Amino acid sequence: MSYTTATADSDDGMHSSIHNESPAPDSISNGCRSRGKRSVLKKGPWTSTEDGILIDYVKKHGEGNWNAVQKHTSLARCGKSCRLRWANHLRPNLKKGAFSQEEEQLIVEMHAKMGNKWAQMAEHLPGRTDNEIKNYWNTRIKRRQRAGLPLYPPEIYVDDLHWSEEYTKSNIIRVDRRRRHQDFLQLGNSKDNVLFDDLNFAASLLPAASDLSDLVACNMLGTGASSSRYESYMPPILPSPKQIWESGSRFPMCSSNIKHEFQSPEHFQNTAVQKNPRSCSISPCDVDHHPYENQHSSHMMMVPDSHTVTYGMHPTSKPLFGAVKLELPSFQYSETSAFDQWKTTPSPPHSDLLDSVDAYIQSPPPSQVEESDCFSSCDTGLLDMLLHEAKIKTSAKHSLLMSSPQKSFSSTTCTTNVTQNVPRGSENLIKSGEYEDSQKYLGRSEITSPSQLSAGGFSSGELIKVTC
DNA sequence: AACTACTTCAACCGCACGTAC
DNA sequence: CGTACGTGCGGTTGAAGTAGT
Image 1 (cartoon, rainbow, N blue to C red):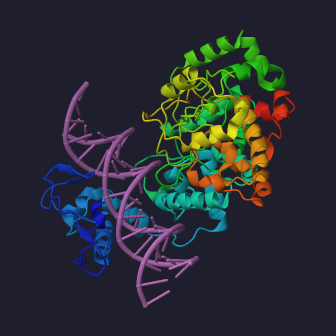
Image 2: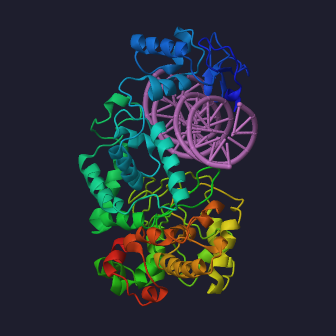
């Protein structure tokens, strides 16, 4: 980064730097348009003098029109930089210091609902900025990752839902992208209402839809995924159309509707997906395929950047039932390539699941990475996922006894390992005493044995939540 | 005290969106 | 309708600070 070049030009002795790549007037440089009299824009840490200038400017002219700052003042900062400095540090009523417990809990709850919608979260935390929240979250991820804990504590699932309902009821949303921070709690209409339209719409169709977030959250335990720095993508676990259709008797709340409307899993899949190709949320994966075993990460559930699990019903790219992306999407896999891969790549035998997972962990991400704003067609089914989770957990217990650090997975880790990338460092997260501790975080989504799954011995109520 | 490793956080970047012309 | 501009957002980076050895 160019701003790292520290010089002593600062008027108050602080480090600062000059961005000397003088762009031509009206050219775009690093996202800042440098126009008019000044073409050299300062970068790097702000000095108190600069702060004073900016504060004076805002007092006189108000917020906004940030590009005019450099025209009307001696400040050699681009508009974006001014805006950021004001919003994050200079504006009044900013809270500084550590987050309170209440704030932390709210952040966790909101993140469970929204994903990385830092700005929206900031609206619910007066005095806090999106940047602060983002930094807090990233730090939290690392802390919990080190501790071998899931991102979301168990209590979040209940509170989360409660919060969601209140959030929906109050309809507190981002009203206007242009609005100022002090307008936080303003109510109103905007296109963003689609988020709640989605929720309501889904809820109307799916009586237990609101509970889906519960299960989604339950399945977002642990950390994983590797990205440049913070890693961890935690997609919700969703069943394939075939699974939904076939799961009929176990899902009384919705299966009757599904089975009534669709004559076959294929029909269900095709119809549901084709109704809305872009949402393509129902995975066409077949339960006979075990994508987790693909060693090229193709099994990773694709829930790109806060996009919605729509079940092919309602096209939107807003979060719907829960946070779909929990952390930095440094690699998002091509849903098509991934799906194609596990359609064409023969699955290795089940026998060495941990090896498979290990191989997966060590596999580089696919070279082809592309954005997708629909739920991946390579979504692994819930049953698949749980089955493998159970297997892995069973194997992990065994591995722990075998004292093989490289193959020791916490149940938490296992939960995510099978659905996403896992940083190499997390392989050793669990130690003997931590296993039980991590177990409790599995909460209601925990399946204790593969046979329990295959026999359908789990609570139907839980699965209703998933499928509906 | 010196060095290293790790963490935190301010500030950058690219992109997307809305509006004005 | 297309373009330029202003703004906001989410992701990323690296200097500074801190802890450990």
